[in-house]
Image (cartoon, rainbow, N blue to C red; front, side):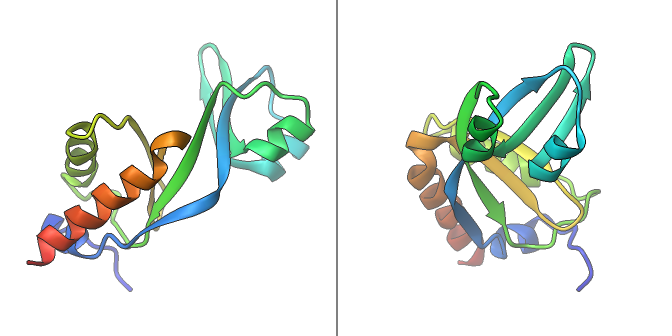
Length: 134
């Protein structure tokens, strides 16, 4: 299926899915093969390497979790050049006081939210999609 760029179509087809497992961010000095295997995502920044991975995996490796969160995957196949999806999601979540960290990948967007607000965030995204369809 071709990735979507139309904001209306993206919102209609969000189909958010809440991962049942907690994730966390952690700080690394360097990226090893083991860390690459457990990483959901990594980022190289001036200050060092940031990793997002399952909380259990980070703890098993003795890494200190910095921000524990849950991942909501937007099942819609969004194009990287699509305009407005992240802004629409952020606005809807911010209206409920929910912080969101969005990571865009080639096929889907992933929204990381505080663990204690994950169900609320899922409901907000489901409502956003329903509203777009009506």
